[in-house]
Length: 160
Length: 64
Image 1 (cartoon, rainbow over the protein chains, first blue to last red):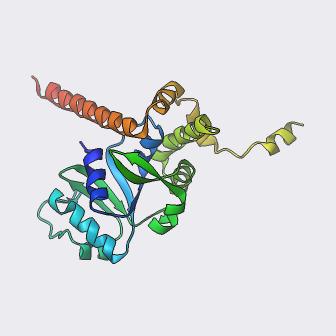
Image 2: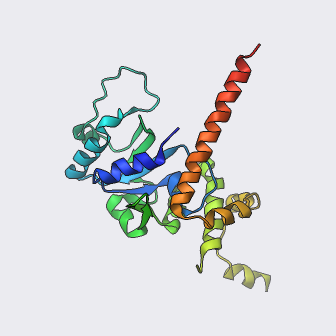
Image 3: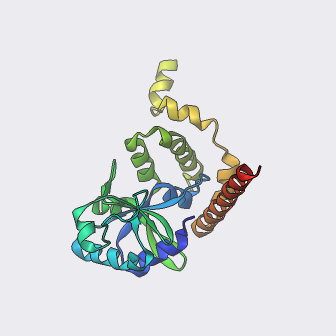
């Protein structure tokens, strides 16, 4: 089980620059679908990699589904060598994305995001239009039902 | 005339359209009455319940 709240708090309190995307962003917009992990697109500049590494250092991040004992070292350098990391942590599953299809990198997503007040913190979340666009661009069969739901949500909230 | 009406409508993906009929709008309306924070807390509770059901299923399968 993923502790969404604690994961988001750890990231924000660690000063990490990120945009919440994926299933949990959809939940924040009103989706009724069950989601298991937190997906974020994070800024790739060196200072942010340091912050991200520090924010999760005590949470035992490890590559999800990988056999135990791999020489995986959680650090800013490791983050710098990759882009997307699907992690399990002591707080639950977290997907770190350097960029997403149809949305691009952190800097490109920021103009399509807004600040959500969650748990006493400001958390940057992808807006509904862009979330729909990225789901559509991903083109994964498993996303089609989620996409339909997001479109219905947009109709229900337009003009609010 | 029907063609004019079609031209005014935005294009919709037929596969997504097929899924739309199955979307429970009452659940969405209920969620929209909550704050984003309440929605995320409710999702955590749902996740906890789903995990409990999975565990119960595993226990039931182990039973002779």
